[in-house]
Length: 133
Image (cartoon, rainbow, N blue to C red; front, side, top):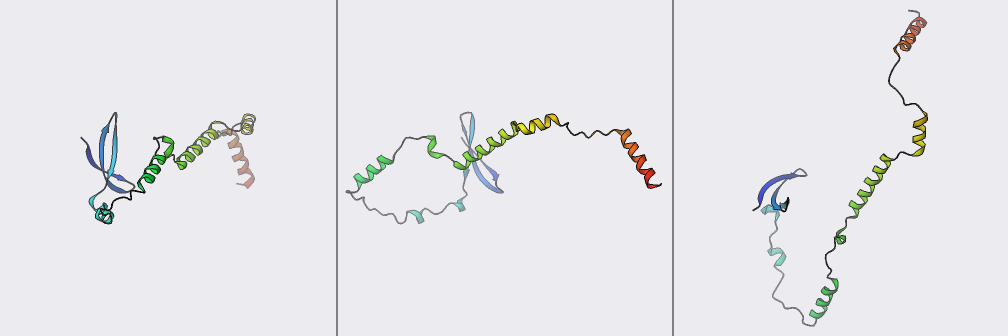
């Protein structure tokens, strides 16, 4: 049993089918009738011709040569791999500050936003007496 629903993906509403599988759910995007092209436009040119018997052994040999067992390495995504490398590099940069920065931060006191009120009042009074008020 499957469920049919609607889902908005990239500002467009799509029909979807939800199929339970194992401990999860598989989501299939579906097409509306006006999005499906007529099959006659694709298959009209195919006739009842028979294959050339001289070519069949060559075609079978080519298919046998090109056939491979499934391997996940067949479908790699170089963009995804490069993106993961960039993310890993940024994580390394955040975790390990350079030695020069570590020494500088160890020797220099950290800036503080705490203000000594007495010093601020003395400066204010001194500034008022200089202006002649």
